[in-house]
Image: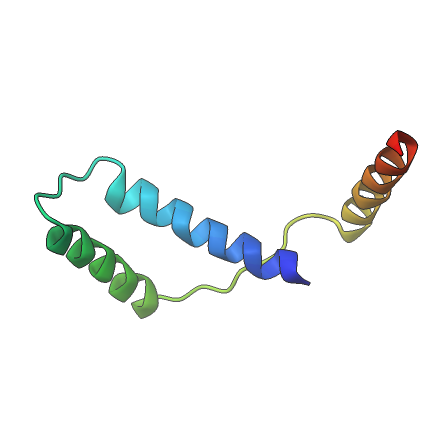
Length: 74
């Protein structure tokens, strides 16, 4: 589903922020770009697959509850 790849993208940017950007000091845009490029290079050298940890039945139940809530509002 589209959610699965969005979770992976969100996780990637969260990791980038925590490990490189949050406490970084960048004196120019070029320095910032270099830090991001280093992170991407290191990330790609040791790739790990995104693995779902949530139980599918719990996800489906949560979606159904959300739909029911939205329908009760309208």
